[in-house]
Length: 498
Image 1 (cartoon, rainbow, N blue to C red):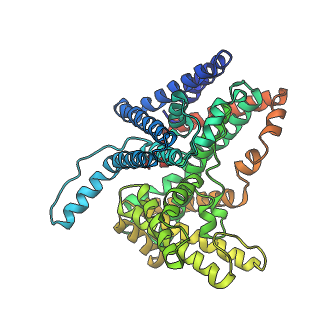
Image 2: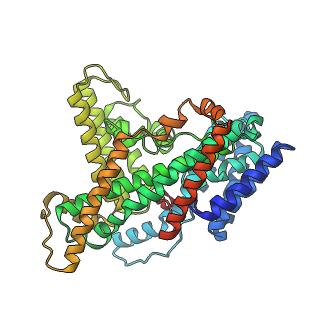
Image 3: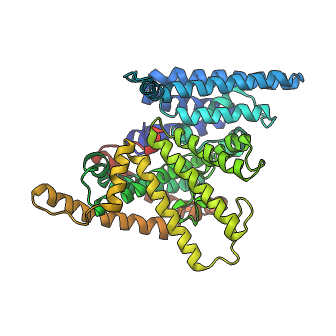
């Protein structure tokens, strides 16, 4: 079930909201169990085959969390560490098996001179997100940061449908108080309307912008990559740059808006990353919760910046390399992660050598407009080049595209109908890329307009009859956008593949 489908918006969402708020009048526990059941149904709608995996993962991790608590309360610290190690082994073992077994099988076979074929294991949707969420939970349990152990609350924490499939990665300590807060279980017309408005913006990004510019990506990366002109290669790379941007940004807005309707505020996961002035700034804005997870649960345990400059740079590189591998079992993702690791090392080294900044801190004094603009342009160019590997089906395809971007011929010679069609698509692609660039670089994001510190004020104003007007307006726009996506064929969000 996709957020951008009629069955979700006209059936699943209304029934979930009604059931949740009606039951909340009688029992908060009952409403939590109902939302848990709705979220499990949402996941099972995709494929019943992997529902046991999700439920089994929840049961095992919840049991391990209780086990860790019991050992800590009993003063048996070693036992809690053993339970944590067991949890990490089981979670990462499942992730490696489903996501990386075929990749490892083929590559180990190549090293041994054997032509081992992939088994064809199907990746369960959302496994990366619910695995990382539960790893964070177990680590927090061992660190004594978890105080809520009710089974129904934990089940909802993992399966909560607005975040289950593609994030954000959430923390137990941030979500559990919200699930138990009586105020979150009180129906609010203003809250529903504000959530619907945020959802509408996200749906527009997905249906109009991401899916609109996507038609110029496939021909470049999947069909003509070996015979591209320079213009085609750049349009294809930029088209994917903005497709991924608006696809993921749209999902984050839709997830945030949906959750807000239920009175639960998800962490902001996307904050205009193409406006970043450096790669460090980019990773503070792109997939914010994944960046925080990699920092807190990988970079810091590796030693962070505590063991000297060389070790710090190595830790950065390893973190980004594994962050790239998290996105998929392909050498292209490993190269993408390695590139960003190198980018971050250069960025930190540049700051230390030429600006005297301490680690991770922006300095505004002395920064000329030329430096700011140069930094932003260089950052964006670096991100675009890395996205080529992220999108390509193989490193060879990525190199074809990059070669055309740097050395390709400037124009196509339209000697036949196919050539003429490619030129026409190129002109349309340029217009789409320019339009997307204007929106990404010049327009404020939803966080600026509706989210950051403005919930209550906007929500109160939407409680009035004006709110009813906005609710109706947003509903009509959503129905029109859903009609568009149904006509084209409903498309999945790109991050569903990771």
